Length: 180
Image (tube, rainbow, N blue to C red; front, side, top):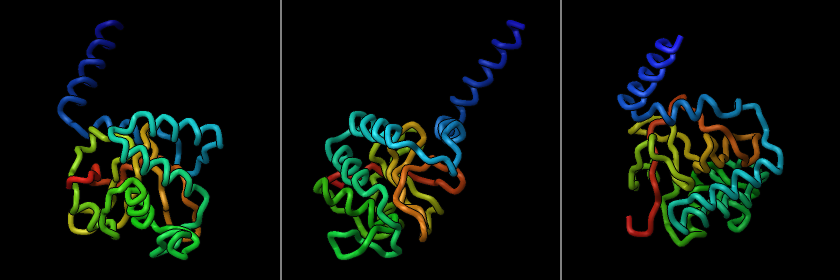
């Protein structure tokens, strides 16, 4: 029995060392299912931890701004109430969140991805932008908050919410900064 456990542990360590995405995929797989809603207390805990663990003050400020938008409707092309829209779309939310922190990023998910700077998916930190699609076209972006969760403006008919980091067509991440 001991030999089997040691062998299984060694295989897991080898797999993690060989595949830098293993941590991201394992975190996504252990995250709550997509239909799970977080209680208000869970949301507060997730957001508070994200702000504490953010790598920069700007990332913490972006998370704080985006978290205040929870419950607003997804609006395709939406730039938020301050710009006359009832809510945001995904890239409108990320752009507004970082603008509130003094960092200007482009309006569309693809342009935000191209602006960078790139971050390995295995090294995600709270405040990082995560992109879905491919290198030619990012069709969606969310704000990583840790623990396999993103702040997300998901789709028409939905509200801005916390969702599990889904690995489906997740392909890249960036860490917006003032000097890039």
